[in-house]
Amino acid sequence: MPLHNHLKEMRARLGVNQQEMGKLVGTSRQTISQIERGDYSPSVTLALKIAKVCGVSVENIFEYEEDTE
Amino acid sequence: MKQKERKLAVQFVIICLLLCAIGFCVGKGIKYVDWDVLMQSVPREMIGAVLTGLYALFTASSAAVMAISCGKLKRMVSGWNGEDEEEIQHIEQKLNFPMAASSVIMIFNYFLFSCSCYYLLPETWIYGLLPCVFSIINMIVFTITIQKTVTLEKQLNPEKQGSPLSIRFRKEWMDSCDEMEKVLVWRSGYAGYVAGNSACLVMWTLSFLGQFIFHTGILPAFCVCTIWLIMTIASMRESIRLT
Image (cartoon, rainbow over all chains, first blue to last red; front, top):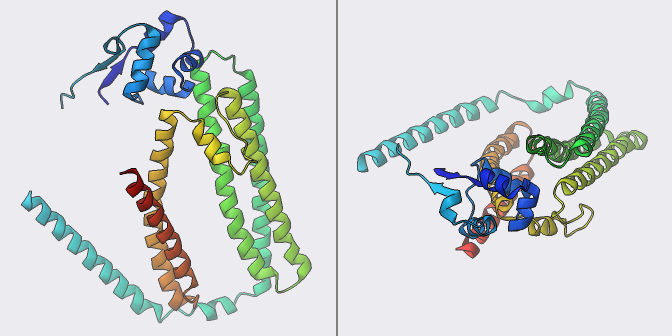
Protein backbone atom coordinates (compact mmCIF):
# COMPACT_ATOMS: atom_id res chain seq x y z
CA MET A 1 0.00 0.00 0.00
CA PRO A 2 1.65 3.28 -1.03
CA LEU A 3 0.20 5.19 1.93
CA HIS A 4 2.89 6.49 4.26
CA ASN A 5 2.05 8.12 7.55
CA HIS A 6 3.54 10.15 10.38
CA LEU A 7 1.09 8.98 13.01
CA LYS A 8 3.80 7.77 15.38
CA GLU A 9 5.51 11.19 15.35
CA MET A 10 2.18 12.98 15.79
CA ARG A 11 1.28 10.72 18.70
CA ALA A 12 4.67 11.33 20.30
CA ARG A 13 4.05 15.06 19.94
CA LEU A 14 0.72 14.66 21.74
CA GLY A 15 2.44 12.54 24.41
CA VAL A 16 -0.07 9.69 24.33
CA ASN A 17 0.36 5.94 23.93
CA GLN A 18 -1.48 3.82 21.35
CA GLN A 19 -4.25 2.92 23.80
CA GLU A 20 -4.91 6.58 24.64
CA MET A 21 -4.70 7.61 20.99
CA GLY A 22 -7.23 4.90 20.17
CA LYS A 23 -9.57 6.24 22.83
CA LEU A 24 -9.20 9.81 21.51
CA VAL A 25 -10.17 8.85 17.96
CA GLY A 26 -12.71 6.20 19.00
CA THR A 27 -10.85 3.16 17.78
CA SER A 28 -8.82 0.28 19.18
CA ARG A 29 -5.15 0.20 20.13
CA GLN A 30 -4.55 -2.49 17.50
CA THR A 31 -5.85 -0.22 14.74
CA ILE A 32 -3.48 2.58 15.75
CA SER A 33 -0.63 0.05 15.84
CA GLN A 34 -1.54 -1.35 12.39
CA ILE A 35 -1.80 2.14 10.87
CA GLU A 36 1.58 3.14 12.31
CA ARG A 37 3.22 0.02 10.90
CA GLY A 38 1.65 0.73 7.51
CA ASP A 39 -0.28 -2.54 7.56
CA TYR A 40 -3.69 -0.87 7.42
CA SER A 41 -4.93 2.14 5.46
CA PRO A 42 -7.69 3.83 7.49
CA SER A 43 -11.04 4.91 6.10
CA VAL A 44 -11.49 8.57 5.19
CA THR A 45 -13.60 9.07 8.35
CA LEU A 46 -10.91 7.63 10.61
CA ALA A 47 -8.14 9.57 8.85
CA LEU A 48 -10.13 12.80 9.34
CA LYS A 49 -10.73 11.97 13.02
CA ILE A 50 -7.00 11.31 13.55
CA ALA A 51 -6.12 14.58 11.82
CA LYS A 52 -8.65 16.46 13.96
CA VAL A 53 -7.24 15.01 17.19
CA CYS A 54 -3.68 15.86 16.10
CA GLY A 55 -4.78 19.35 15.10
CA VAL A 56 -3.32 19.13 11.59
CA SER A 57 -4.66 18.41 8.12
CA VAL A 58 -4.90 14.83 6.80
CA GLU A 59 -2.07 15.49 4.31
CA ASN A 60 0.27 16.24 7.20
CA ILE A 61 -0.23 12.74 8.56
CA PHE A 62 -0.95 10.61 5.52
CA GLU A 63 1.02 10.79 2.30
CA TYR A 64 0.02 9.00 -0.85
CA GLU A 65 2.94 8.05 -3.06
CA GLU A 66 2.45 6.84 -6.62
CA ASP A 67 3.67 3.30 -7.15
CA THR A 68 6.65 3.67 -9.50
CA GLU A 69 6.60 0.03 -10.64
CA MET B 1 -6.35 -10.30 -24.81
CA LYS B 2 -7.91 -12.96 -27.06
CA GLN B 3 -4.59 -14.80 -27.19
CA LYS B 4 -4.39 -14.77 -23.40
CA GLU B 5 -7.93 -16.13 -23.12
CA ARG B 6 -7.15 -18.83 -25.66
CA LYS B 7 -4.08 -19.83 -23.61
CA LEU B 8 -6.21 -20.01 -20.46
CA ALA B 9 -8.85 -22.09 -22.27
CA VAL B 10 -6.15 -24.55 -23.44
CA GLN B 11 -4.83 -24.78 -19.86
CA PHE B 12 -8.37 -25.42 -18.61
CA VAL B 13 -8.96 -28.20 -21.16
CA ILE B 14 -5.61 -29.84 -20.28
CA ILE B 15 -6.47 -29.79 -16.55
CA CYS B 16 -9.92 -31.30 -17.30
CA LEU B 17 -8.39 -34.07 -19.45
CA LEU B 18 -5.77 -34.78 -16.78
CA LEU B 19 -8.46 -35.06 -14.10
CA CYS B 20 -10.51 -37.34 -16.36
CA ALA B 21 -7.46 -39.57 -16.83
CA ILE B 22 -6.86 -39.69 -13.05
CA GLY B 23 -10.55 -40.47 -12.50
CA PHE B 24 -10.40 -43.28 -15.07
CA CYS B 25 -7.32 -44.83 -13.42
CA VAL B 26 -8.84 -44.59 -9.92
CA GLY B 27 -12.12 -46.05 -11.19
CA LYS B 28 -10.29 -48.97 -12.78
CA GLY B 29 -8.23 -49.53 -9.63
CA ILE B 30 -11.25 -49.55 -7.28
CA LYS B 31 -12.36 -53.02 -8.29
CA TYR B 32 -9.07 -54.48 -7.03
CA VAL B 33 -9.53 -53.03 -3.52
CA ASP B 34 -11.84 -54.83 -1.14
CA TRP B 35 -11.88 -52.76 2.03
CA ASP B 36 -14.34 -55.08 3.79
CA VAL B 37 -11.94 -58.05 3.55
CA LEU B 38 -9.06 -55.80 4.66
CA MET B 39 -11.00 -54.56 7.71
CA GLN B 40 -12.21 -58.01 8.70
CA SER B 41 -8.58 -59.06 9.14
CA VAL B 42 -8.24 -56.54 12.01
CA PRO B 43 -10.38 -57.33 15.11
CA ARG B 44 -13.00 -54.68 15.84
CA GLU B 45 -12.02 -54.64 19.56
CA MET B 46 -8.44 -53.80 18.63
CA ILE B 47 -9.51 -50.81 16.52
CA GLY B 48 -11.77 -49.67 19.36
CA ALA B 49 -8.98 -50.00 21.94
CA VAL B 50 -6.45 -48.13 19.77
CA LEU B 51 -8.93 -45.34 19.06
CA THR B 52 -9.89 -45.02 22.73
CA GLY B 53 -6.20 -44.95 23.70
CA LEU B 54 -5.59 -42.22 21.14
CA TYR B 55 -8.61 -40.33 22.42
CA ALA B 56 -7.33 -40.54 26.01
CA LEU B 57 -3.88 -39.35 24.96
CA PHE B 58 -5.39 -36.53 22.91
CA THR B 59 -7.62 -35.40 25.80
CA ALA B 60 -4.77 -35.39 28.34
CA SER B 61 -2.29 -33.63 26.05
CA SER B 62 -4.76 -30.99 24.84
CA ALA B 63 -5.76 -30.17 28.44
CA ALA B 64 -2.07 -29.90 29.44
CA VAL B 65 -1.12 -27.73 26.44
CA MET B 66 -4.08 -25.39 27.00
CA ALA B 67 -3.37 -25.07 30.74
CA ILE B 68 0.32 -24.27 30.14
CA SER B 69 -0.48 -21.85 27.31
CA CYS B 70 -3.17 -19.97 29.27
CA GLY B 71 -0.98 -19.80 32.40
CA LYS B 72 1.96 -18.42 30.39
CA LEU B 73 -0.26 -15.83 28.68
CA LYS B 74 -1.80 -14.77 31.99
CA ARG B 75 1.68 -14.09 33.38
CA MET B 76 2.63 -12.17 30.21
CA VAL B 77 -0.52 -10.02 30.38
CA SER B 78 -0.05 -9.31 34.11
CA GLY B 79 3.58 -8.40 33.44
CA TRP B 80 2.75 -5.85 30.73
CA ASN B 81 3.38 -2.32 31.95
CA GLY B 82 0.74 -0.73 29.70
CA GLU B 83 3.35 1.19 27.66
CA ASP B 84 5.65 -1.22 25.82
CA GLU B 85 4.08 -1.42 22.34
CA GLU B 86 6.42 -4.13 21.04
CA GLU B 87 5.55 -6.37 23.99
CA ILE B 88 1.78 -6.06 23.61
CA GLN B 89 2.15 -6.83 19.93
CA HIS B 90 3.98 -10.01 20.89
CA ILE B 91 1.39 -10.93 23.56
CA GLU B 92 -1.51 -10.44 21.15
CA GLN B 93 0.15 -12.67 18.57
CA LYS B 94 0.59 -15.33 21.25
CA LEU B 95 -3.08 -14.97 22.28
CA ASN B 96 -4.10 -16.29 18.87
CA PHE B 97 -2.63 -19.71 19.70
CA PRO B 98 -5.08 -20.92 22.40
CA MET B 99 -8.03 -19.49 20.41
CA ALA B 100 -7.08 -21.36 17.24
CA ALA B 101 -5.88 -24.48 19.08
CA SER B 102 -9.07 -24.83 21.15
CA SER B 103 -11.21 -24.76 17.99
CA VAL B 104 -9.00 -27.39 16.36
CA ILE B 105 -9.21 -29.49 19.55
CA MET B 106 -13.01 -29.38 19.41
CA ILE B 107 -13.09 -30.55 15.80
CA PHE B 108 -10.73 -33.45 16.57
CA ASN B 109 -12.84 -34.17 19.65
CA TYR B 110 -15.99 -34.58 17.54
CA PHE B 111 -14.14 -36.84 15.13
CA LEU B 112 -12.55 -39.06 17.80
CA PHE B 113 -15.85 -39.22 19.69
CA SER B 114 -17.64 -40.52 16.58
CA CYS B 115 -14.90 -43.07 15.85
CA SER B 116 -14.67 -44.33 19.44
CA CYS B 117 -18.45 -44.64 19.80
CA TYR B 118 -18.71 -46.49 16.51
CA TYR B 119 -16.22 -49.13 17.57
CA LEU B 120 -16.99 -49.31 21.28
CA LEU B 121 -20.66 -48.65 21.99
CA PRO B 122 -22.18 -51.84 20.57
CA GLU B 123 -19.66 -53.97 22.48
CA THR B 124 -19.74 -53.10 26.17
CA TRP B 125 -21.61 -50.16 27.65
CA ILE B 126 -18.96 -49.50 30.32
CA TYR B 127 -16.23 -48.98 27.71
CA GLY B 128 -18.73 -47.01 25.70
CA LEU B 129 -18.80 -44.49 28.52
CA LEU B 130 -15.14 -43.61 27.97
CA PRO B 131 -15.69 -41.56 24.77
CA CYS B 132 -18.45 -39.64 26.59
CA VAL B 133 -16.10 -38.84 29.51
CA PHE B 134 -13.29 -37.72 27.16
CA SER B 135 -15.70 -35.64 25.13
CA ILE B 136 -17.02 -33.86 28.24
CA ILE B 137 -13.44 -33.16 29.41
CA ASN B 138 -12.56 -31.69 25.99
CA MET B 139 -15.69 -29.51 26.03
CA ILE B 140 -14.78 -28.23 29.50
CA VAL B 141 -11.18 -27.52 28.35
CA PHE B 142 -12.55 -25.70 25.29
CA THR B 143 -14.95 -23.56 27.32
CA ILE B 144 -12.35 -22.66 29.96
CA THR B 145 -9.72 -21.83 27.31
CA ILE B 146 -12.07 -19.55 25.37
CA GLN B 147 -13.29 -17.92 28.59
CA LYS B 148 -9.72 -17.28 29.80
CA THR B 149 -8.50 -16.03 26.40
CA VAL B 150 -11.42 -13.64 26.02
CA THR B 151 -10.84 -12.34 29.56
CA LEU B 152 -7.16 -11.68 28.74
CA GLU B 153 -8.11 -10.03 25.44
CA LYS B 154 -10.58 -7.80 27.29
CA GLN B 155 -7.92 -6.98 29.87
CA LEU B 156 -5.63 -5.75 27.07
CA ASN B 157 -8.45 -4.08 25.12
CA PRO B 158 -11.09 -2.83 27.56
CA GLU B 159 -13.41 -1.69 24.75
CA LYS B 160 -14.14 -5.32 23.82
CA GLN B 161 -17.58 -6.58 24.85
CA GLY B 162 -19.29 -9.94 25.27
CA SER B 163 -18.93 -13.13 27.26
CA PRO B 164 -18.28 -16.49 25.55
CA LEU B 165 -20.95 -17.99 27.81
CA SER B 166 -23.58 -15.71 26.28
CA ILE B 167 -25.50 -16.91 23.21
CA ARG B 168 -25.14 -13.37 21.79
CA PHE B 169 -21.33 -13.46 22.13
CA ARG B 170 -20.50 -13.29 18.41
CA LYS B 171 -22.74 -10.28 17.84
CA GLU B 172 -21.58 -8.45 20.98
CA TRP B 173 -17.92 -9.08 20.12
CA MET B 174 -18.33 -7.96 16.49
CA ASP B 175 -20.25 -4.86 17.59
CA SER B 176 -17.32 -3.87 19.80
CA CYS B 177 -14.81 -4.30 16.95
CA ASP B 178 -13.71 -1.22 15.02
CA GLU B 179 -13.31 -0.88 11.23
CA MET B 180 -9.84 -2.46 11.02
CA GLU B 181 -10.83 -5.47 13.14
CA LYS B 182 -13.96 -6.01 11.03
CA VAL B 183 -11.83 -5.92 7.87
CA LEU B 184 -9.55 -8.57 9.42
CA VAL B 185 -12.55 -10.74 10.31
CA TRP B 186 -13.95 -10.44 6.76
CA ARG B 187 -10.59 -11.22 5.18
CA SER B 188 -10.13 -14.26 7.42
CA GLY B 189 -13.71 -15.34 6.66
CA TYR B 190 -13.06 -15.08 2.92
CA ALA B 191 -9.87 -17.15 3.26
CA GLY B 192 -11.93 -19.74 5.18
CA TYR B 193 -14.63 -19.73 2.47
CA VAL B 194 -12.09 -20.29 -0.31
CA ALA B 195 -10.39 -23.10 1.64
CA GLY B 196 -13.81 -24.61 2.47
CA ASN B 197 -14.81 -24.67 -1.21
CA SER B 198 -11.61 -26.49 -2.20
CA ALA B 199 -11.99 -28.86 0.75
CA CYS B 200 -15.61 -29.64 -0.26
CA LEU B 201 -14.48 -30.58 -3.76
CA VAL B 202 -11.77 -32.89 -2.40
CA MET B 203 -14.11 -34.38 0.23
CA TRP B 204 -16.84 -34.96 -2.35
CA THR B 205 -14.31 -36.85 -4.52
CA LEU B 206 -13.30 -38.97 -1.52
CA SER B 207 -16.91 -39.62 -0.50
CA PHE B 208 -17.75 -40.57 -4.08
CA LEU B 209 -14.87 -43.05 -4.18
CA GLY B 210 -15.80 -44.21 -0.66
CA GLN B 211 -19.20 -45.34 -1.96
CA PHE B 212 -17.44 -48.00 -4.02
CA ILE B 213 -14.38 -48.84 -1.88
CA PHE B 214 -15.78 -48.67 1.66
CA HIS B 215 -19.48 -49.14 0.80
CA THR B 216 -20.37 -46.01 2.78
CA GLY B 217 -23.56 -45.34 0.86
CA ILE B 218 -24.61 -41.85 -0.20
CA LEU B 219 -24.61 -40.26 3.29
CA PRO B 220 -21.01 -38.88 3.18
CA ALA B 221 -21.62 -37.29 -0.25
CA PHE B 222 -24.94 -35.91 1.00
CA CYS B 223 -23.24 -34.35 4.08
CA VAL B 224 -20.41 -32.78 2.05
CA CYS B 225 -22.81 -31.38 -0.55
CA THR B 226 -25.08 -29.98 2.19
CA ILE B 227 -22.16 -28.11 3.80
CA TRP B 228 -21.04 -26.92 0.35
CA LEU B 229 -24.54 -25.71 -0.48
CA ILE B 230 -24.97 -23.88 2.83
CA MET B 231 -21.58 -22.15 2.41
CA THR B 232 -22.39 -21.07 -1.13
CA ILE B 233 -25.93 -19.89 -0.37
CA ALA B 234 -24.83 -17.99 2.75
CA SER B 235 -22.04 -16.28 0.82
CA MET B 236 -24.22 -15.45 -2.21
CA ARG B 237 -27.08 -14.17 -0.04
CA GLU B 238 -24.75 -11.83 1.84
CA SER B 239 -23.13 -10.70 -1.41
CA ILE B 240 -26.54 -9.90 -2.95
CA ARG B 241 -27.63 -8.10 0.23
CA LEU B 242 -24.47 -5.96 0.31
CA THR B 243 -24.64 -5.01 -3.37
